[in-house]
Length: 352
Image 1 (cartoon, rainbow, N blue to C red):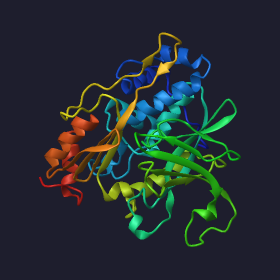
Image 2: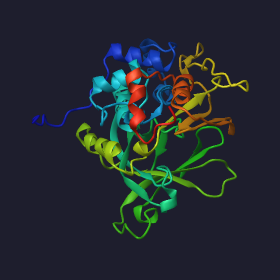
Image 3: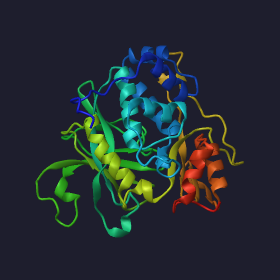
């Protein structure tokens, strides 16, 4: 039995790891020196943060491929393994990998932050037919403090493309994420969003919801969270087991991978081309973040691409070979022969 070592702090990336990360997510255009210069400028911390959120969400796909294309039953959350998987191999991952990595990036850049858990809605988990409500702890987010103000940062939820101001005494925050999608945060009583009168505590919660367009009538619940509880690395293994083993884990039930599309990644001829890159403004030294054009998602046997609010690809695939090709073309993911073969005995496998 491994003895408990006490609460371990989330270590920042080293300078060399930070350079690797920046090179990877920006396709070689950002260096640590450029980022540090931008950070030293007025409004630089929000500027850099917004840029990194967009790059991270576009370059590091969200999903649970390791639950299907691996012989490992549970992903390792050790920092070296996560860095190898997400940055060196580009395989993507879920929130328990992506969020701590992004937190380690921000810690290295001297941001003030902590991690906390979120409860994902049934609609987000694909269980909307079972009624409204929220799963147990199954998501992880960051709370940052910049100039005395708290912000929600979620580097793997593609609808959030910038830091979101959290002001309990202020109005609801409504903003545009990906094209045509509208996101809203509300600070409200837990009992007002939890169904079946399951909550009567009187506690308050932050509630994130979204609409696909400004003409949609109903808001879709995404998740709820609190800024009053800090999560530590020791809290993550329990949630990791649930994500890997639970029958109702949305990552185990389906093969899903999703990422943000930046401007220039898709054209009407169905080519994936060079991403519009982030770079430093020659006028003021701040970063110019790439613009967002849409999303690409592979869910089981369905490839869906949204660009500028329109569904431009809605393609059904039939074989494992086709799915592997999509992983490579649209997500930059290349699996080994052993990894590709691991799914063949599982119910999520396609024809082979």
